[in-house]
Picture (spheres, rainbow, N blue to C red):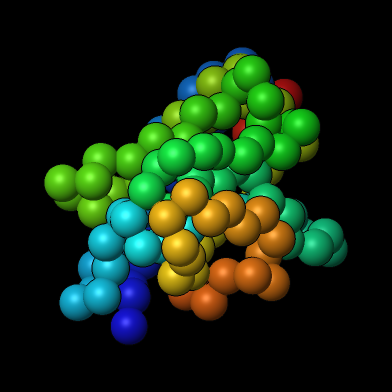
Length: 128
């Protein structure tokens, strides 16, 4: 079992920044064996991938909407995943979720349906 707890969401004006955190715990969790990532879901829309990291941190994937503005990183010693979000836009408003799934070293999963473990989410609201 893996538990994920997100934090860091809030309300900001367009152009502002936020840093989301996701603390992972569970006796099986280790960064080398799990793909982890950030996903978001706006009201009335499907959940979509924002940024993900392969097991072992070998590679990353960013959605087109996140490229150049968001940065995913992880502190392996703290089992914590981060999402630095800059130049936020109103269309970034959504519930943001952290997710994890067991993976082979270097394996990357980008679709929400490929992830088994999910946090409860943290709300991000960007006003114009």
